Length: 200
View 1 (cartoon, rainbow, N blue to C red):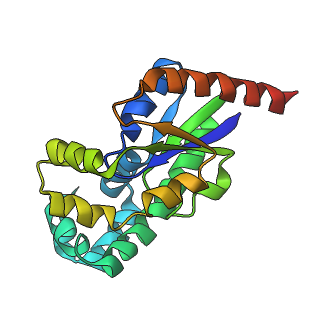
View 2 (cartoon, rainbow, N blue to C red; view 1 turned 180 degrees about the horizontal axis):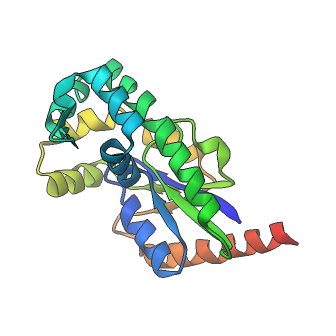
């Protein structure tokens, strides 16, 4: 079974692409969703986060996202501190998930910070999703109801897009000019072939 990474900058459309792969029958692990779940369910991680960011990190046992966001969004050191706690827990959870997947040619791990978190090394191939910055900013503003300045601030916490795409094995363009589904289907066929060659 091949382990495929799926990544891209904020607003590139990773989740949209991942859902098309799911329609094609490919199991997808959503790292950001897993991180949110683990921050609420993993007792060891909860203790670490409380120790790092204070007792207000949890209210009635649930993550106080506003408190945490206020600390990390404008502070790279604090964001790094948060990621250094959450990433190992997510990596362990993803590995368990990989082991639970059987009888499938390949699986996908969708994550914004595949390279930044150091998880890219354990994967066979990486797909990058690219889109023009103006379009990415508009998408995130529409999705999250935030300003362009806030979107750019979040972008600054990720590897620059062109550099990220150069690190990927395959690139899908989600620029609203080229149809995205044919690109995904063509890549799906290619990955099925690569998986078949690996098992020979």
